[in-house]
Amino acid sequence: MEIPLDPGRLESGLARHATIAVPTSGRPAVRRRLSALADDLDRAIRPRATIRLVPAAMVGRDTLRLGDADSLEGTSVHRFAGADRLAVVFASLGDGIAERAARSAERGEMVEAALFDQIGSRAVWQLGQRLLAAIRLAAHRAGSRAGGPLFPGDPGLPLAAQPILARLGDPGGAGVEVCGGGLLMPLKSLSMVVAIGPGVRRWARIANCRECRFHDRCRKPAETRKVCR
Image (tube, rainbow, N blue to C red):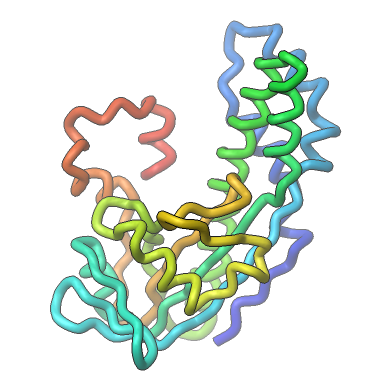
């Protein structure tokens, strides 16, 4: 099974779609500033991504054996039941958008800095959704199924999984560096794993949120909760 990645398709319209997602209702000044940033945003966002497939098998309920030596452990790993492969994904928007946010802040243009940061966060999320769609399409064409994604740091998959994914995946090919504590550089980067196999079941990310011990007092805005679904 191959998962082809077309850089042009990954990038196409990414800045525009992320910009549309920024709430500007009743804020004409913000809309004007967004419009002024449009061309710069297109130049700033340069996505790169890698996907590697790793043999996988469940061991018990909360352990997924990967290859010959590695494994993922966590209370959400049971969602990968039925997997025979795991897609290990690394992706980044590049340094451009973080650099522009920093320069704007240095000039005292705090609205522009905040807009660059917001759009970068939304763009990297949408990049992950495009990669997930590519994995699911490739699995379907191969007569298999792909489940939902898990991100290190999600409820049930600790950040300690990040070095394991770095060994199995190709962060360098996506322009990503895994730093201490499992953090990724550049800032607008992501890693995720997606289970593939004939018996894999899909789930919504909101299911992971419900397993979080902070779910009942979560202070994330409603729009973020909606995206997680």
